Length: 351
Picture: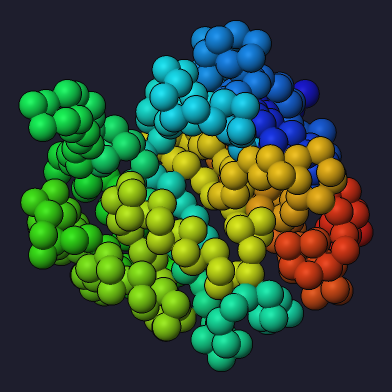
């Protein structure tokens, strides 16, 4: 009897349960009984039940799984920035505890959806960018605090990186570029920040070990401009945590909607955490209007990177492409389909 892969589902908050359910339906249809699913709490839902955004039982289940599929965390009921416990802490903690230091966010465009983007169609031709964002260092994890001074209140966040943290994520970017168009753009702020100067120096060292792959350096402010003015010029973009967070949300306008984009968070092993890049969208939670494509495409990445099922990954991606080509559109794309209808449109394109 073939051993089933174990996938932990973390639906989370807002539209998270809706898109995770849709993605599971597609994944089950493609793998046909080869996966055993388990569901656990994270984020606000976990706070309400256990008082913690990442319960010990959730973390233990994720550690022993082959892959994790997450929906979204957060919402207005937990949105007090002064609160000691917040849903986002669960997301940061699971990345750190599982050693998931690299966030892969592919951004590509569909010719049929050119009208959904605010950019001119000619700028969207041939866009296929893979962002590799460092995930466990930088401002989000460095020393921080608030304190009273004689002049008022002072707050600080610290961007800290070691050469080892930089090297491992840049090396991954080069390995991925070797399977694509063999170009890496390293984004930093080396004209101002010492952490970026270290980043650039390490990137140069890594590039010397990959002579067949071109490396270019780009300051983050000019990179933000180029993503809009000439997105087709990029292949693999690697950058630190906060820069990557901002640039990938900006790049979502190329595809036409945040709801279309998947992501994978990876470490040194095969275990990965997969999630759409959108948030919990509390304004539409429970209405059945969420776009499930980002979550569905996240399962394709799950198949490819954690389960070793590249053919199944391609099957999911082709079904999404075919559904879009056939005119399936959710409301964020100017259409009328809800979550369930869009999921059915993808299911209908599976062989």
